[in-house]
Amino acid sequence: MSRASSHALRHPPVTPPSEPAGAPSPAPFPELAVAIEKGRRRGRGAQSNASGRYEAEARVAFDDGWHSLDELPPFKTVVAPDTARKVITRNDSPDIGFDRSINPYRGCEHGCVYCFARPTHAYLGLSPGLDFESRLFAKPDAPALLEKELAAPGYEPRMIAIGTNTDPYQPIERERKIMRGILEVLERAGHPVGIVTKSALVARDADILARMAKRSLAKVALSVTTLDPQLARTMEPRASTPPRRLEALKRLTEAGIPTTVMVAPVIPALNDSEIERILDAAAHAGAKEASYVLLRLPLEVRDLFREWLLANYPDRYRHVFTLIRDMRGGKDYDSQWGTRMKGTGPMAWMIGRRFEIACEKLGLNKRRAKLTTDHFARPKGFGQQLSLF
Image (cartoon, rainbow, N blue to C red; front, side):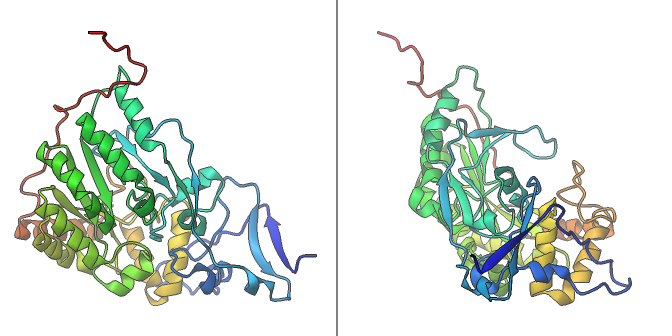
């Protein structure tokens, strides 16, 4: 008979966030009771591993008195193959500048606690919490699938965005090199690509990206959330350190690759005071463009961020959520097109204005790098009838 048991709950308890500052004090935080023991999640961002929203039952770790939870092993990164038959994902969102993207991996080992992609793991029957950063899926056939899709007779080229959901240069890319294979396909086809990453590993592919950039086929955006090493390590435990990201920006710029710094996400009362310093450091590293995104808390991300904030910055919890609601029409999140990235209200306006003034002083965004589809050449050999002469 097992010395550890698991209780299944049809309706797992979900406690709403405490009221903004000035409201009566809430009961002791139940979120802390569901957190996974620190030693088991060492080097991870999420505090818990609650079941996904589509699961009929929620499983909660429960010690039956024999201290058997102490024997559970730490979370280790496990990578499984993703056997998708297509690799290009389409979207029709009116407030983003691309209609297609590629995600070489599902889940992300960087462990950024605020990652808005976490809820996608629920589609796999897994937790958006620790599962998202430890149970990963790789697409080893992505380069071949991409070449096949680009060769399709009806395909019309437009910029492909990579890194808009999970990071293409997360740690497992170092050995698997799926992203490099994708870039090789895009270079041969003369297809434009825009990359977003938090990893200095992107500089590994500076050779390909530089050749593509000469033909206006590539640009790279590096996200720098903070310059505080302690905050970065706590909030983005397995992402590259801020100095390494800035060094990658410099290396890419020196190679002739258009670069952008993204101050993302901006979290009020946590990293918003660093906007100007981040932009200044990135400009000195060679970045010519900049953008920012306000913290987004869709679905399970809200509770995961709450747990993290309570565990690491409990004194700021009420203030942070008060400001978040001030910028989201009184809610924790508003997914309205056009405002979900920047928020609304006086605080959101002030953040936007500070960003604009800093960019103007530093000469950022004076000119935007434009990519072209003029070099596109449809790959051959995928079911196409070749000429005999």
